[in-house]
Image 1 (cartoon, rainbow, N blue to C red):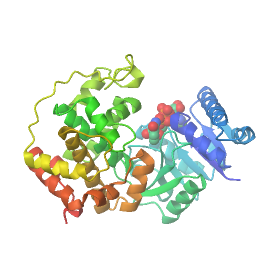
Image 2 (cartoon, rainbow, N blue to C red):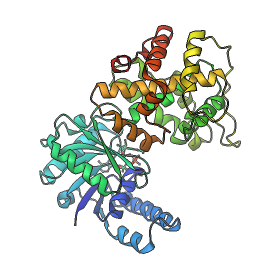
Image 3 (cartoon, rainbow, N blue to C red):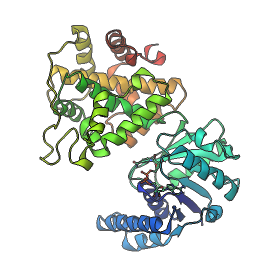
Image 4 (cartoon, rainbow, N blue to C red):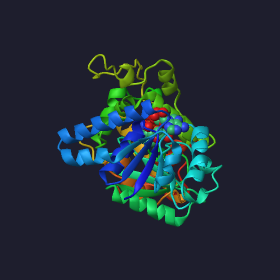
Length: 401
Ligand SMILES: NC(=O)c1ccc[n+]([C@@H]2O[C@H](COP(=O)([O-])OP(=O)(O)OC[C@H]3O[C@@H](n4cnc5c(N)ncnc54)[C@H](O)[C@@H]3O)[C@@H](O)[C@H]2O)c1
């Protein structure tokens, strides 16, 4: 019987515990105090009840899975684990300290993994003598339902560990994709442009919140960027954007948008505060932001290329020129990012497509979008955009050659 040690019983730790327990693993669930672990177990119990009610698991299987989860308040008890998944608070020194302890507690053959979304795995491993066995295992929320897990490879980790982790992910009924240890890994990095570009467009007063969301929903995206920002938390998303921007030494294409900072400062955080891009105290049908539209100022060349790009997407409702423009800009930036990642060896085009479809439910992966549209057209559009708006639109070398 295999046992996994899970450190942290918050949103992610509890979700990951459910995923392992359902697949037959014994789970050692650890947090800072008995009270915290107990409340984590209560969350897990409630989730299992919901799964039973929805007919996703038989009551006896849920019962058996719960019985496989064992509360722990001493890290030393992880000496019994065959794998460790760390899901504690997103703080580098906390994680580093934990890993250097785990390094001494766990057998040298045991993979030590972190679920961090934005910290470098290499930095977390720094301080552990056994860097060769430290990797990322990045689950998505809710971890017991989302199919994708990014397996993050540092420059030190052994190939056997990466293979073993990929196999474990498959055994959980999920899909692993291997990514290099670079800021945002694959999904959070590529998806940045799904938020940044519409935010820029909104800041330029070229379209309203509703118009922009409608454009994306018409093009097959499950939810417009602003509705999604409100759901996930405008503040949480802003922190990720800032972190990726800083880790890339202020690369212009990742520059966060002032409008988002203003919203965070004003407490417009989305659903959790009742108001964000939409007003949830008032049906959430209309935007809460008073942004006055300006007359379109883009050159005819930019508009013409944007119409061509959007014309190659599957769009179900008629859209105006500005809506086509925001779609063309965003899709082009997503495709461009995927080309940058392939160029840098972060992952391969197929895995990036798979990751984006499973991790974000985009209708197509970036390389599929690029096939649909034509990469030279995207490159030409970005060159023109770069000329007008600056280096944020620099196309990757692979895209243009
Ligand atoms: N929330 C998400 O959507 C999401 C998605 C993917 C990855 N992540 C990552 O997962 C990790 C956890 O995120 P979360 O949202 O579950 O956080 P959370 O705040 O819900 O839970 C964190 C837990 O860690 C515990 N903790 C703090 N220090 C500890 C220590 N030294 N030892 C043991 N436990 C400790 C806290 O008591 C708390 O229960 C973070 O690294 C985050 O970046 C989060």
